[in-house]
Length: 364
Ligand SMILES: Nc1nc2c(ncn2[C@@H]2O[C@H](COP(=O)(O)OP(=O)(O)O)[C@@H](O)[C@H]2O)c(=O)[nH]1
Ligand SMILES: [Mg+2]
Image 1 (cartoon, protein in one colour):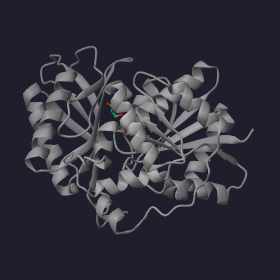
Image 2 (tube, helix red, strand yellow):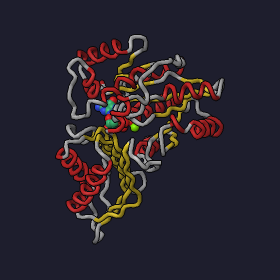
Image 3 (spheres, helix red, strand yellow):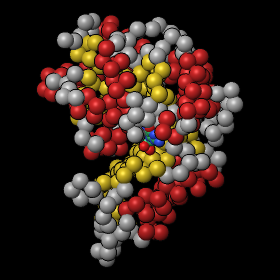
Image 4 (cartoon, protein in one colour):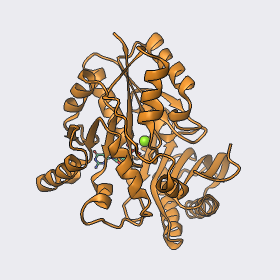
């Protein structure tokens, strides 16, 4: 049996990580074994990798850039997973504003390592809320209009498309979105799932385990004007810090997370920018942890898990993908951390922080 590998693409917050966890769980429960690669542009401290691990999935982290540009590293990790862990499917996401992995991962693997990999259908996860940007109503979601190019280009690469988050939709809405996706990509199957509630996961898994990519050759305008316009708007911020009280008193980490996100939201809104995805992971003792997401300034904070206990110290990891210049984003994040720490009455020590624009000068 050849080694099966699948790329999972899709916009920031569409549910790539949640879907990969659901697929892996389904395969593992049936007595198989699946692994997830959490790929990110940040150097380290990837919330998705920590969260996937806490959900009981075998996970490997590939940081420091898209897997599009680390083929040898990717192949090395894949071989190791197959040799030492004997997995039947490895899935990797790509950073959520990324496009081009059909060429830069699938075609490259196929050309450079002929016969070694069985490439499962190139899967694209879509989020109904963001799809509204490309629906006839062309919803304005406070995201730069350049982002529409990314959404369309991502879908164009798909061998199969997943409409995720159907738990948030009624039947009419589901049909409306399915019709839209089918019209945008008429030759590929479209699945409707809820990765969160694990609805229809079997259908997708059965399909990806029994089909291969078509290795389409398409021009999605990679590197072109629209691509640059969209990528230029994006910045990444990652940090890891430690919170502590002065007097040993305990505090509620969930309150800190909320205060921090609200401070970020306020400042991003004032500056007329947006944050398509902010993730916070807080590590308590033993298996206690908290994880929250914000999918834009107009949405509620989503706690995927709340921290169960109060602590007098807490380690926190923050990942932000913003439609904002990196210098401004960095300032906003620093000020928001100060404000939240003051509200909860804790002090903080930062161990790691990075902030960069996708196209910043001087980046290595
Ligand atoms: N309601 C709902 N929320 C979901 C679903 N899948 C993911 N989410 C939420 O959407 C947010 C982003 O999901 P994530 O998997 O991190 O997206 P990614 O950026 O594409 O990897 C998280 O808060 C998830 O809990 C779903 O099927 N239904
Ligand atoms: Mg993710």
